[in-house]
Amino acid sequence: MPDIQTALTNTAGISSVLSFWVFVGSNAFNKHKELLLKIAYGVLSLGFIALSAGIVMRGIDAGRFPLSNLYESLLWFAWAIMGGFLLMSRSYDLKQLGWLASLTAICFFLYGSWLPADQHAIKPLVPALVSYWRQIHVPPLIVSYAMFFIAGLSAFIQLWQAGRLRSVFLALFALIAASAAIVLGTFTDSNSFLLQGLFVGGSLSGIGSAWWQLSSVNQNKQNPELADTFDEIVYRAIAIGFPLLTIGIITGGLWANHAWGSYWSWDPKESMALTTWLGYAAYIHMRINKELSAEKLSLIAIAGMLITLLTYLGFNSLGFGGLHSYGKFK
Image (tube, rainbow, N blue to C red; front, top):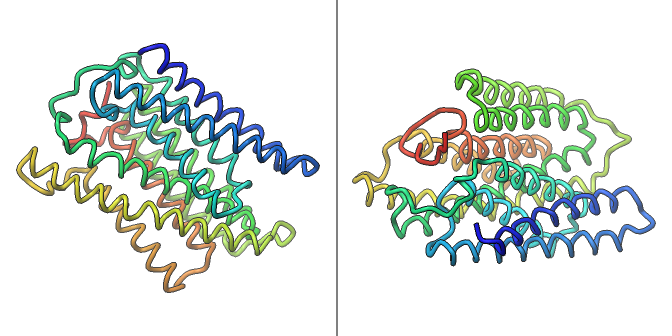
């Protein structure tokens, strides 16, 4: 990997770490809050610019669109998380979300950095990816996944500001269990059935328990105004991600017909993408028609984030197989 591209990617990673700590400081120290927030946004913006340049440089060096393996998709995901947060911060006060967005970018930078060296290297495309459909189909999906993550992170804050602290911790348990399954599946030879059980069992038990505990309210931690604001942010992020996911699924069907002679084959990853689409369609329907409380909608958004994680990374790291298994590196 060329030195300049490595330097740009490392700059983006370091910037996400620095912005994380400055965002944390801005929430902890009221005296210098505004100055720290300006610094945090500036550092994160610098990281976004550096990562944008790094992705462009990788494409120039490869002589192709730089989105062909897991490592490159993780760079795009981190780019979309950073860019999506900065974009939405132009319309909303997102200082409470800043440290979570930066932390998420850090996690995906680390995940990518731990991948084998051959994932970092620029190599010829595998035959399945030699198509102009790749740059049409994949980017909308990656950006939609990032927006769904921003929605899920905002949902955690909405629940916290609504005083549903028990539900926050139980939902966090679900996210940790799911993430642990992904990491173990990627970097170890753990039994696939056990990892699938960890992901699905942890997700269902965590979200189910969080739903059950929604009636438990800590009134000392309630901030109804902020809770309403983050309920709106969850909806806006999903409203951006949903049409992008729709475009990704449609173009995926067109690519599948071009490559395999069928628009839809009920491949596990295709089916999970459809499940993700249906889940967010249900969220939008219930949000518009006010069929559920903001707190229940937040838990649905967090469950959607877990489904998105399974769709994006789970099928290659947890051993589900299918026609999309060329994304595996083990």
